[in-house]
Length: 202
Image 1 (tube, one colour):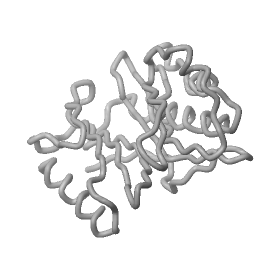
Image 2 (tube, one colour):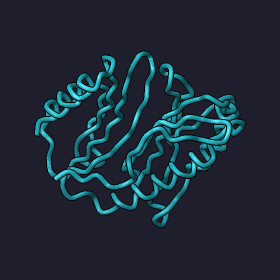
Image 3 (cartoon, one colour):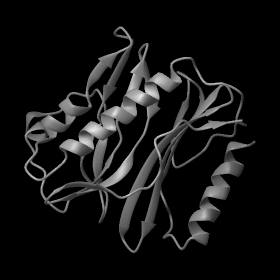
């Protein structure tokens, strides 16, 4: 299937559901470890057996923004794909469990960071503000952050897309999974309903 055909169906689905235009779609596709990273634009390729499709998909309506992140395998996935997914889901759950008023960015990064598979796999935290606009801080998994970012304290009412990822054998974004999360006085409330399960497109 042509990537641009898939992208066009996504734009149609957004419009048909009543979403505001233009929604942001972060698009990375191609062989694992050599995916083409494009923001809001698919390549002119057709999807191939062994590809991965890593998407940031945003819904926008009336100034509000929500995002999900999903990596799908096209055909037979790489051997560590399932392990990377489980590590990423566990990192997401730990961050959401920790996310509440008064916690610092440093504590959230720590909650997401693990090493596994005999040192072959590392998880890290990607996270940035959503809700009313494109808000900070913009955290990228594995990137050193300035002290003033690490010491930021989370307030009630903040909304984030929490999207940890796993690097395996130094291949970045081997797996990534994210959802929009609101910070309440009693803790974090996940706004999405997707289950944490492998998506393999055949």
